[in-house]
Length: 415
Image (cartoon, rainbow, N blue to C red; front, side):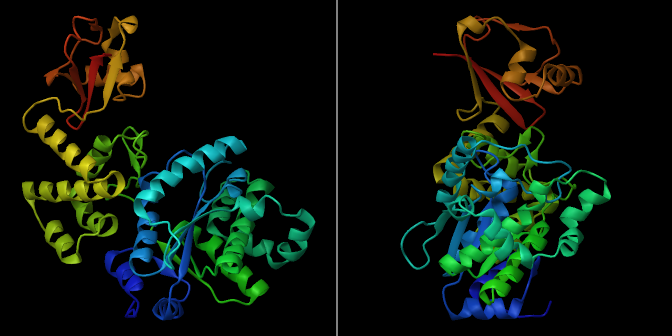
């Protein structure tokens, strides 16, 4: 791609690795150069927090605002009732309206850290598509909107085709999802002048549908831009770790564990992640990613600090780094480690159960295997006895449990 962007936003997207594809680079760039462009990303409310896999989208909106434009975060209060079939092997479980509202409340906490919601021309908007989807008249919708969609074309989209090729069921409920998402873009353009939808590259078909629908109904020119679907250099999906999703809300993943996730980035990913997930200058990102040997660990600490500071604040990042240094370099226990507090009524407790309760293993079977394979430690000493019982005397002072070299937790008596 030899196009040289005029707008600050497109320049950042191309320089830092956010850009996978765009429906019309030049026209979109022109629009960005002429004035404030409102742009949106939709987030379905399937959990009480977003995870690291959504962070590239959040950072896209943050850069949109930082370069003088207006981000719109669209909560899928309506579409979550249907479920996005994109690249899923099965249908999503349906949630109740109360569950959806609770999830939206949790997700809003994440966005408040990254975007400024105010009444200024570039102030972010938090919207919910239930606002226009809940009261749709089905017959009117079929007549006015449904007639613009070709089933043949919808069947050709990769997200649908992959399900059908594997002869997996795709319900009519889910098939409607892409029509509803297209309608979201139409409504956002009509109500708020939204000119662009962002999304992962798996959303390309849905985004193009919305652009096409808006052209047909309103005769407006709008745009779509996708970001790459990220995997780590070892092929793992971004946002997952050995012990599950890396959530952005502190109550679902502690700032210390969040910091550790970034500190454990593989060497090959450091440069790419610095550009995507921090606001360090490109020169600094290049300098840090060029470090080799043990020096690359300092780059990983810079990465962990910068990402954690954006998500949880400067104090949480500094505390996490101090705890890590205490735990790893000085053999201490650290004040900020995930902590399991047990009451006297719960004692005695097996060490296996304590490992599970502390979040270091998902099951007793996994905890026992950890001990058998010499992967567990108690106060930094090898833990070899899977039958060990913890009583009040054993917990007279807090103990540190470790799974491998990088995951630790404290177990203590509740005060």
